Length: 305
Image (cartoon, rainbow, N blue to C red; front, top):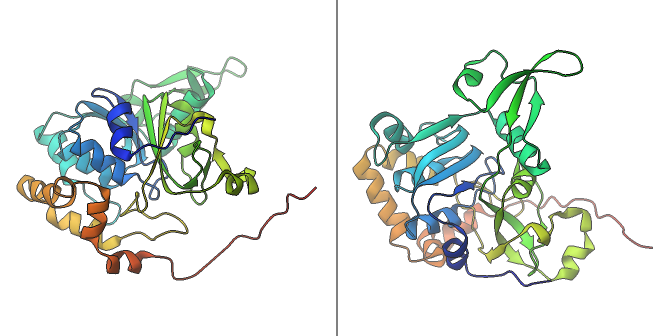
């Protein structure tokens, strides 16, 4: 198979274009590809449509950086502290740009991506019936079941141009091992036209083959893979590092005004030339503090014959 490993800057430059829809944060509170988001900002991408369930502050800072004109999401904010000030400024004051919002629940986002993964135009569901969500979102239409006549909601398929996901390990052909809370990652990968993977480490194909059931993203779905240790910081990656709560709280305190946010953006995204510089700014002491303190291995399985 083709080796798909390229630098993160090249992956973003080659496969993310202005005006595209990009699904991010598919692992809910974990595995959020922050390093890829920072690179999108550094490269000045514009008019993006962001798709995701719980986006945490990644959506908020991409909005504040002027990269986004549309959001398809269940929630945009800061899981540790609540409000996302850039999202609020964009919706209420069109700062830095007007922002269109397609309102979903986590479940309807998941169903939409599932329909996209299956290659069908919608999936029927009982969720959202009679709610404001259904009235606000034209992609949640009431239908009658052709068999029982039951009232249902047709959740329209979501088919992003690009999925960016973070995983624990992968081989050079893009076969990925991941574990923990996967959220909507697998459907997002299958629903998207292009898939960029950032990984904590590259391992040999022998490691991947030793546990084939854990190869939840086969290389056939992957367009490009970039080796980015700590690529999901400040969100957690199971078995590699924990959530950096302090970072999220600092973001909340330091982005209340537009001027404060621009200072934060310069300090943490624009001035570090790349991800390695970002890690140096965080410092070894802080990173070591986030590493797991206890081991909790699963019981090995045996593939002998």
